[in-house]
Length: 161
Image 1 (cartoon, rainbow, N blue to C red):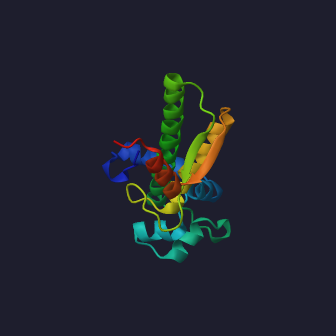
Image 2: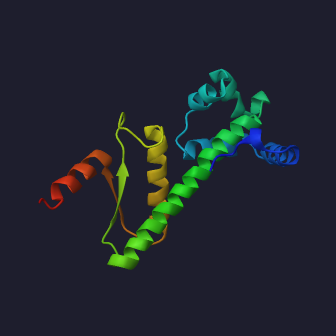
């Protein structure tokens, strides 16, 4: 889900701005790091200097994150939550069809590996970590494997015609 402040009407914008203003820099940083987003990523996307972005997380500088910065991080955070929910649904659907898995395999990417939808490796791995934590909390045994090795292993084990 993407939070698009440009498409909000005045009341929606004010409500969202007030919600952002009520949150602190620690929450901003927690969400940003949970999503695997670097401050440089946000600065580049929003067209601000990196030192400006650094001030958002320094309560002593008195410069809270802008509404645009919050929208960027909140969009990524909601996307992370959606991806974790989708992973849980997929495991539960597979379990319903095939029985309880011995282990759920979670793909982890190496630096430089391609990702989907323009994500960085850090963002893709943030989803993998969050999914692994959620699935473990639900009682599943989770095993991490390198994404490229898992794909190669699946291809080598695929039936040949």
